Image (cartoon, rainbow, N blue to C red; front, side, top):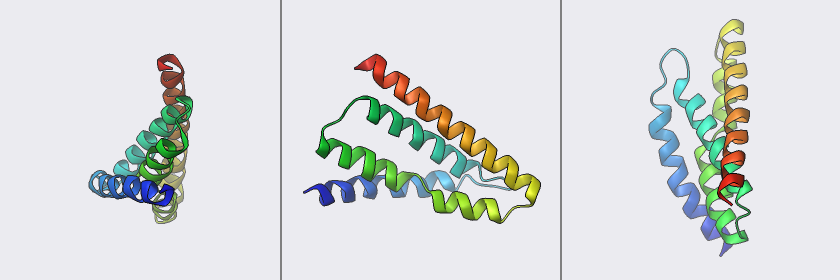
Length: 110
């Protein structure tokens, strides 16, 4: 049952990532937004202390299917050193900040 919940969550998260990642232009804004939003949701879900089934659906499935480290890594490598540095720093700061905000919101809601 857990594997099915992960698959259902990923079946929602992956198409959402695809749609938002298409916002990319010269700078991978879409993937930056995807990874930041996904990190924020992950922080929120973690703070809410979800049961195992709900965590499988939302944390592992939805957030796991939605965010993408591999796309982030490829997009960083494909850029000039200066642009890559900007992208890596922006994504890292935005993602960690969003996760912290999600955690804080979840604590406030719980």
